[in-house]
Image 1 (cartoon, rainbow, N blue to C red):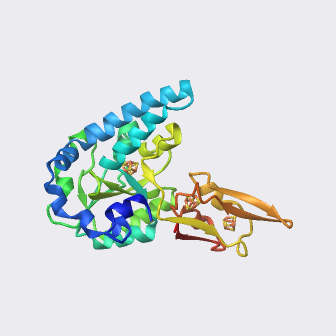
Image 2: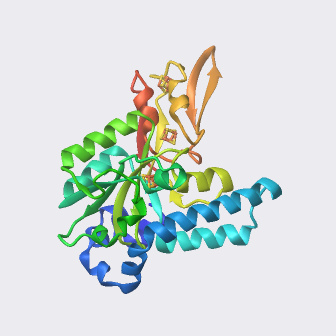
Image 3: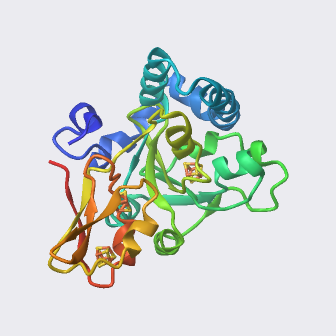
Length: 270
Ligand code: SF4
Ligand code: SF4
Ligand code: SF4
C-alpha cells in the first residue's frame, strides 16, 4: 500500500475510505479557500510556473533536488493524484450520490480546448464543486457543471480510456477526495510536470501490470499504448515476449486493451 493508504486509509486503500469524501472535511476554511481559488491559482498559476521550470530544466538539465522535494511535499498536502484502474473508478462512481462533468481544466489552460472529461464526485448533497469559481472557463459554450448519471460517467471514461486516457483521482487539500480525471501525457499538467521536469505529483496506482509469458505472442501492441515507457520486449528461445518494468509501470491498465490474448493483468503492488 502507498504512503496515502498508511496515512489516510484506516486499513484500506485510501480512496476506498469513505471518510476521505466526507462533508466534515469541507468545513475546514483552508480547504474551502483552496477550492474557491483552485482554477485560478492551482491550475493557472501552476501551469505558468511549470513553463518557467521547464525553461530552467531545458537550460540546466535538472531542477535542484530541494525544489523538487518542496514541490512534491506541497502537492501532497494540497492537490495530489493517483492513477486508478477503471474497475476501481466504477466502484467509486457507484458509491457517489451526485456526479458532475466539467471541462478539463488542464486542457483549457494549455490551449483552450473544451474537453469535458473531468468528473466532480460527492458523497454528500452539498457538493464541494459548488464553490468552484467557474468563471475561469469564461469563453466556453458548454454547460459548465453538468450533472450526469453514473452510467454515463462510467461509459465516457471507458470510451476515453480506449482513446488513450488514464484515470486519476485527486485531493482538494489532502485527504479530501473530489474528482476523477481522465488524462494523457500531452494534455495533463501533472503528467507533463512528471515527464518534463521529473516532479511527481501523481502516484502510481496500487497495482502494476504483469505479463503471462505463456499467453504473450510478442506482437508489441501493448507497448504502443504505454505512456510511461514501461514495456519492452525480450527475445528468448527464438520467441519475443513483452516485459513490464515494475518500477516504471503506473498501473493504469491501458496496455490490457491492446492485448488480444489477454496476457496482461493488474496485480497489487504488495
Ligand atoms: S488532471 Fe486530467 S482531466 Fe483533470 S484537469 Fe488535468 S488533464 Fe484534465
Ligand atoms: S505497463 Fe500497462 S499498466 Fe503499466 S503504465 Fe504501461 S500501460 Fe499502464
Ligand atoms: S499485446 Fe499481449 S500478446 Fe502482444 S506483446 Fe503485449 S502482452 Fe504480448
